[in-house]
Image (spheres, helix red, strand yellow):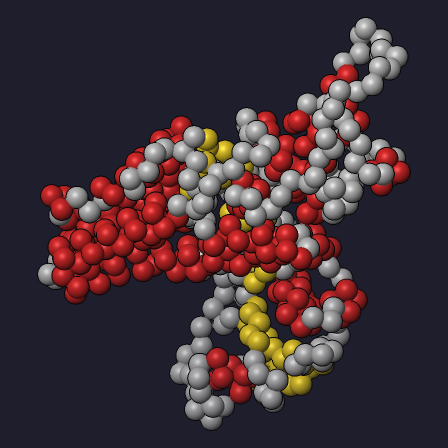
Length: 452
């Protein structure tokens, strides 16, 4: 079939709705998301999960899945035994509270952690928290991995997890991949291959680029890198594996939109029936994991900042940030270190000059302003003509910064004339040549009748 203009417009409107869901920030709608999870399991022919756990970010969710699936282990625990008779504490003392509080305090003597595991009468949950606490020998010491492990273990326990309880194998294939494949086969049979291709372009092509390429793809890549850095050796591989099993929740909107548009065109075909649970989660939560006996869900981000073409972009903090503090720092889509983001508001000429990484220096220059940097760093004037003024500045370890200063010949409403700065190739030798280059012309070819 061939879609009419009205049908294409309908598909585009559905894509807009799913795009809005894909970039929505704020807490998840947990009750609706959990119902969607249970429906997804049932539609796939599985019993609903026994437990559903919630975490503040995909990073914490991935570590939780690694723990629940047995890939990442909770540190060895001291055995539980009946303690020998000792002088009883004061009647007002709470031995469990004392044990838990002391074991989770980072300032506890390192000698105590260096000794072999001693028998303990503390409850199992308290001993798990103690073993996973940053600084303990069992947790691997201190650092981002130990901190994250302790946070995830504590959150699992708070939500009712019993140490040793596992979630079973991943059901991503059964819950997500197979329903998608079945729905696609049915859609192609219903619309024909040409009709399906046309509908996919009308209902999903734009949002796929904006969401999957510029947000979800960047998050997936950075998440793997961060988990590898946080956990050494085999633990790093174990922590990264769940990233491959993630279901993207709200970021699945770009392909769900096409199926919803197809379902709207042919409601009798039931094209969204097998995807209803996945769609419910996507409308109400972030990334999630489906395992045999437990599901792990995450909240949507609290912050999402993009530039005018949809790239992650922010100079004053994380461009994509989650409730538990995890985030991605980016400038015009390029990942940048978190400490660089804190530097940007107070950049100096010397700091920019001293940066050895050319890509990071370009980020600094964009934030500082090329025109401002030319003035403050003492750029050399190469010449002027009727088109503008050409400026030149050496950049250590990079190509020279060459720009044309152009004055808009059409005054602003207040009578002033706006100044524009055009970056041109380093080989440029005149302002006319530089301005002509921006139009794809040579200096000789550039002969404007009227300048505006």
